[in-house]
Image (cartoon, rainbow, N blue to C red):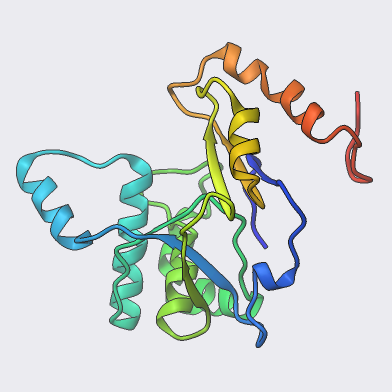
Length: 195
């Protein structure tokens, strides 16, 4: 399981949310049509993509070179499931050169391998099951710059949610995170320190 530090459980979920009955990870992607064509058109018109989207394209290209299968979808903000043996095979053998190049980097750096490459590879080789993201009940991304996070939570009642920081968020928005989470989760977990 992999979760960024901005991901939270909004409701109880069991292993079946993340894995099939036969133990394959469930990969949730958002549809993006005309992936390669869209890239070519944007390149020809001089319109660029941001760092995040470029990292996904690189991952899709690398997996296509390794498997012959291209994914034009993008990952949904989610808590991702993986199989350790598959990740080891991909990082140590199939995409080892890309992993070696990024090892010296302490933070995300342009050109680094995006973790979605592991999911794309698992899907391309039948080692994972694809589920298209269809519902904000399943998971929702809440931008910190949005005014009413509680209303979003009440409306969608998501199993997973992301409090996503961005350049549009202000310091005042960021100051709302702790009180929001304390109201949503009044009882600290056994793993949490309260200062």
